[in-house]
Structure formats: structure tokens, C-alpha cells
Length: 430
Image (cartoon, rainbow, N blue to C red; front, side, top):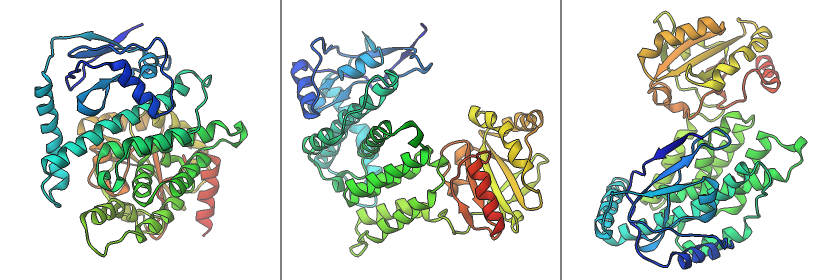
């Protein structure tokens, strides 16, 4: 089996500690039992060698940190990814590593706090400690989720009740203090993902659907988290690419509006202002809002704008010649094209390509695949300035614009889906 070497970007210094005791402490916090054959290796620095997994993907892993730059390896994660490590000559003393890490983290925090106030050493140390602690918790959730994947269903997820309670007691910090910490945001996402997977595995096969999975996430976020965590978790939820394939995206927007209305802006403090800005971008593409106009090039090199299609229903597919699922879907659209008149609806296919060097490949792909509809190309992929307001994070993605230029479906299921065809017919009758 072919092996890939993953060099860890940060060279890791492991202090000499009783790592078995340290490992037991963290396992106890989450209600786990440590395997009798658990071995905590200690070395000044190392890189990782990870084997090809059964699913044909390569998985890299790294240690998680705790207080005082101690480092532990979660034993289940070690076994899961077939992790192997080898001593190397990249050696930093604890003081050097400490200085290196603090400098990197200070730069990040200073950029976040620039509108607020300069961060002092105490805040830096506290925030760094929170980041390191949170990494441990994230790895626990990672293990629980991936263990199901790698055992192909032989292992069932456990209820999160014990994990969640222990997590809150162990971390022991206010979410309002750390809401801008990216690690804390990731942790909330992992918690939501884990609980949704636990719910989903207990459904009957005929009950399982993307819609139910996403609806459970919304209900979980709404009922479990406090106000601050709820806002962060909802923001993460909307960024999740699975939301590209739900038929009820508008439900998320109604909940967002409710959350935003509850934010106290009276004191104009940095926390509330920053949180409000998070959600303003979603307001621009909620159902019923005017679709942000864009102008892109077609195959002939002519500029075409969304406004040019006013008066017609516009079904937009964001795809790419580099995207396997996108190319696989092209033949499936034929049945959809056959059911609609060109005079009533426009199927607008926007290719998200890296740069102009992909222009000829784009044209050739359209021709060879017989890809029907109108075609435009957007360079810089998801970062194309003309499309930023659409908050694209995955391809294929689908959007429906009404005859009056208003957004009807910010995110939608594939247009070849029978439910999508039914919905498009309903929109044409309105």
C-alpha cells in the first residue's frame, strides 16, 4: 500500500511528562476508558506517515496540545489513521517553540482586535490556552465521527450527553470571551455534526433524507445552545456545503432574522457589532431579496449580465470542469431540459474556473458533453468578485431567480431531481 509522508508545518516540542497519566486525565474528562495497550511516545520532534485508507483517501493527523505545551495523542485516533511517526532533526527548545507559537498567534489576534483594543500578554496567554484546550475537544469529536466511517457502521455513535456536560465543565470559559476564536467555532460545528449523525443513525432507512438531517441540525442549534453559541453555530451551519442540497433553505433565514433581532446593539460594543456583521451577508441573498447582479463572459467573449434575463425564470447551476460530480450530472439534466420551453425558463450554467488558461478547456467540455443551456465563465472560482454575494462554497450549487429578479431559492437541490422539476413548474405557474 502506497504511503504518503505528511510534514507537519509546526515543529512540535514534547516536554518530558508522565504522558500516560496526562492521557488518562483527558479521557476521564469525556467519560472514555483508555485502552490497556495505550502507548504515549515522546520525541523532540516528528513527522507523520499515513497509509492509504480503505476509502482511497489520505488522512493526515497531528497531536493535540494542552496546558504548558504538553502534547498527547488520542489513542483511538492513532489506531484509526494507522499513524506512524519517526524522529527527525527538527528540534526546538521549549522556549524557542513557545516564542514561535506566541508570535504567530499574536499576529492573528492583533488583526482581529485592531478595532477593539490591543491585546495584552494576559489575553494572549488565555486565548492561546483556550485554543489548545479546544483542539483536544475537537479531536475527540473527530474520532467519534470518523470511527463510524472507518468501521463501516460496525461502531455506533454514543449519546453526547456525558461528553457535552464534561466538555463544558472541563473547558470552563465563556463563549462570549472566545467567540472570535476559530477553534471554538470549529468545536461547535463538531458538536452539531456529531449529534446530527447520532440522530441520523437511529432513523429507519426509509426515513433518512438530507432534509431531515439538516432540519435536525437547526432544531439542535435552536434548543441546545445559548444565544452566543447559537449565533456562531447557525453561521457555521449556513456555510456548510450540505446546505447546497436542501429544499427548505428559507427556514434558516427566518431563524437568522429572529436571532439577529435579539442581539443587543444598544451599547454598540465590539462583540455585538462584529456578530451582526457576520449575518448581514446572508441578508443579501435571502428568499425575496433582489438578486445581486453580475456580469461575466460567454463562449463568444461577450459580456452577459443577470439583469439581461429579467422577465424569465433563471435556474443557475454553478459548476466547474474540474468538478467530478458536476461533470457526472450533465447527462442527467437532459430530462429536465426536455420538460421546459426555452421561452419560459433559462438554464444558466456558470463555470467556476481558476483563470483564463482554462477558457479553451471550458469551451471544449461544453461542446463534447453537449451541455445545453446558456453558459458563462467566472475566473477565480469561488472568489470571483462578481459572485461573492452568492456565498458559494461548493460545486455544484444551484440557485433560482424569479422573473422580477428576486431570489426564489438561494440554494436548491439538483435540477434533475424530480422534486426540483416539480418546484420549477410551480414557480412558472405563479
